[in-house]
Amino acid sequence: MSVIIISRNQEKLDRAARKIELTTGREVKVIAADFTKDDRYGHIQENIEGLEIGILVNNVGILPSKIPCKLLETSDLEERIYDVINCNVKAMVKMCRIVLPGMQQRGRGVILNVSSGIAKIPCPIYTLYAASKVFVERFSKGLQAEYKSKGIIIQMVAPFGVSTPMTGHQKPDMVTFTPEEFVRSSLKYLKAGDQTYGSVTHTILGGIVQSIPTWVLQSEAFQHHFREYVKEKVGG
Image (cartoon, rainbow, N blue to C red; front, side):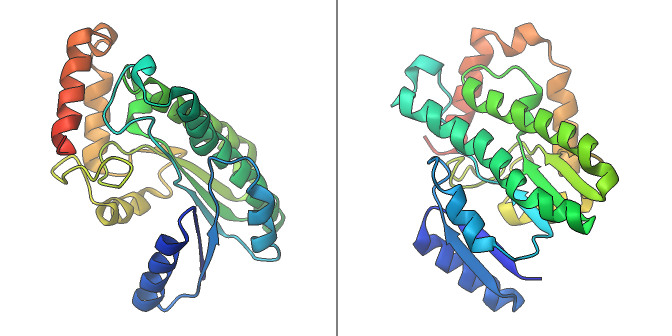
């Protein structure tokens, strides 16, 4: 199985491709594309034309701000609104649109759409990000219902903490996974249904946070403590 990776930074793409090729022996194709822009999908489609895409992982996503804040406190808010919607919502829909026809024709395929555990709860001070991830959940569940009979698995994966550049490289601990740890864990849940938290730890955490009363989650005190928790995790 060959691999195609898409991201906006050519240097990082090339570095990741070399690492994958050295460790797996697989051929890697890179496509540089900025998903915050509207005009990149023709370029992507041209580069994968004629290729049999068996698995699509929609993992692209951005936060309006690494440190949670109220909507109007977000730096460059107007730009960030468009970036979050384009990257977290539109990119997933467009990539599904590109690969689904081939999967349907072959009668098989896997699409993994990465959401977030905070999509399951009201999440003030991450409002824009959380709302975009709710879209991922609803879209994925609806699409799975439409194409399950065609032999296609469409699953929404909703992790909580994963230490990535997007999250400010939060310190790994019992709740926060390294990317490698989370990938190994989440792949075990591939046939576990149309949505999963991707790990036992995050499944338990999901149950806990969903049991918290909404008035607590929406309180000023919770917002303050959540912000301070994230600041500590990213070393802010």
